[in-house]
Image (cartoon, rainbow, N blue to C red):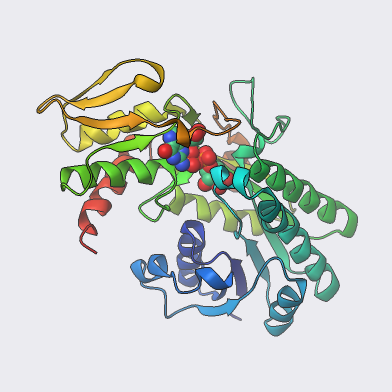
Length: 339
Ligand code: GDR
């Protein structure tokens, strides 16, 4: 019999890739979004699956809406990907972020427990939970030290998922995913912002790209591969939490350098600190400069994941290195530019 899955946050990057993956596995996919995001289904259209999903409106702030949806379909799996997911915004809207990214998870867990505690639950935990880290690699045992209202909310969701698993014997797991990017990434996140910004400059649609802290380091993987790990976590005999990452960490500056190189731009960095700039050697024009407006009140300076548990137990491994990921993102940006 066809399995039925619920994906919250269907119109986001991960929602789209996961829906595509589950549809290929012959699942019936119900996708939910908050009201304001519903019309924005460009990612699902891009993957040509917009007609293959059943859409429902569901605010994670409203437990009655969650109950209505969970009662309506015979779900075997629920993937909670919905969140206020932009770290910078969480400093401006800490209450909304906590209500959706934090308490939203509890509302779903509580509803599953009341209606059918056999439904398997996946929680999108985040490497941001590690926050201000001291150790070289972060794994499932690394202490959490969140640095933003977003990360604090994700820590709440992470522990409440563990707690429901233990207290009520529910199949509830968390995937601690490190940054994962793709052509479907939102434009506010740094990788897509850089790729899109530089392509815009080449097309003469932008003069200078402004960014924030280019010295932060991230472990960036390919989102399309990461959603497979989510599914694998729900197919295990026992519920457990897993880190998903590449094990390689690069600065934002290194990401910029890989992108300019692939775009055949000859560039040089000049200046220091907030005066640092990237110059196009051909015409001496500034391509990128720093704007402190993009700095965060508290920053996560360094992340590098150790996914050996996932490799061993899930037989999952990352396949796309950063150079290849940059190529995928730039090629797609150029291809779809006019749209
Ligand atoms: P992050 O992703 O906060 O790691 O969370 P983001 O791409 O926003 O930032 C990564 C790093 O880049 C620095 N940075 C900038 N960031 C943005 N957005 N814009 C800029 O101009 C800029 N300049 C420098 C940031 O300071 C940061 O250090 C992402 C989100 O998808 C989360 O939802 C998810 O949980 C984690 O990844 C894993």
